[in-house]
Length: 503
Image 1 (tube, rainbow, N blue to C red):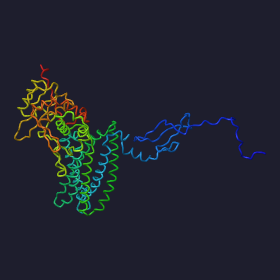
Image 2: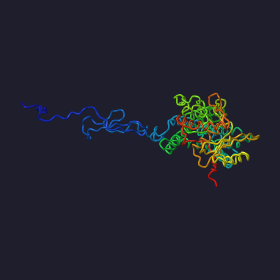
Image 3: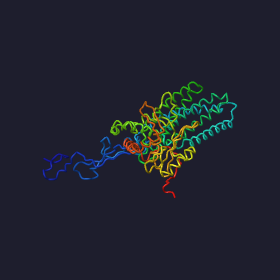
Image 4: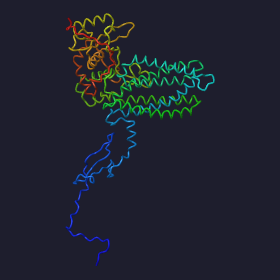
């Protein structure tokens, strides 16, 4: 009987070779990673199979799909590339994310309040009033801007060299100054009838100019801190993108708030005060989130006080508890919020109890800054010793590249410790000089344990001989940069001396 149409006859065994059986298990050949560090795709081949176009396949991170396809998170990655540095988070420091989150929140508060102050200034110069002229309004705005520019120049002259050393503290100062300036601008129209509008507007402009100078300078310093892959320019660019996005959102909310509270002065002040409180809180959290391993004067004083506590128990310095408390992260928890002498601005909510300079230290001082008697005494010691000595008269350790001159009590001037630096004094020499000066110039509160025992000049010189090298090694072990990032706000004066090489 003829076979049915379409029916296949069985193939005799051995008439043809059966296909090679390939294991279903696949071997990973390569993994592809996205710029954010997450694994995006895996390339694999069946175990025992030959490399061919049919056998090699790729699958996304979920593991499904044999053929290449675009990742589902493309928009998310575009968003990340717009606002986050390349290779985030590997290319930035660990505190970057927390800082940017709180910085975004405080910026939003500022831009909403900025809409209220802009409206107030426009009302103050006469926008909408029948007797106001464009020339009068322009003149008042020009005067206001000029006052702000002058204020910025004076601030830069006075505090420019301190901004790198105390970037965290000046960052918070900038935002507090911004709050004061905004409050003055919002209050200026209320004083228009008494002729105080222009004065308040100019004072507010000066305060906001201080904010601009301090915030811009500290932002540059913090950008260098965040950059862990020599990507400071990329971080700055992404910071600009974040600022633009926050500005857009803040301006939108500001227009809504301004429209809603138009003509309601009490409501405007209520919104302003509430946002100001939120702004201060966010800024405190912003600076508290920073963990900086550079050494400035305050950190040196606090580390010196804590090292003094371990003199009786040297073995305790290397314990995990002591190392964690004195590491950059541990010290950042209760570091001063504002620059020296300005912490009263947060009273009564905050009070600083750390070691302070009871006799100010002028690091990098000119020889002639001391009194004539002190200058003659210093020059005599430089001539006789060939290297610097403390005012105690004891011969110093060889190779010291600084000289101390402690001023005597003066009826009209606060006592100061002047530190003259030699022309070849490096960062490590400046650190040594400040430690020596701090031993005779600083004291502190006992409430948090940061207390430096004020020593006589002879005792301080002896401490430097016995403990300085161990102190530097100890704080380096705690995680502090004692070589490159020593920021002590030294003045630029330098002195050349070596009497034994003179004719």
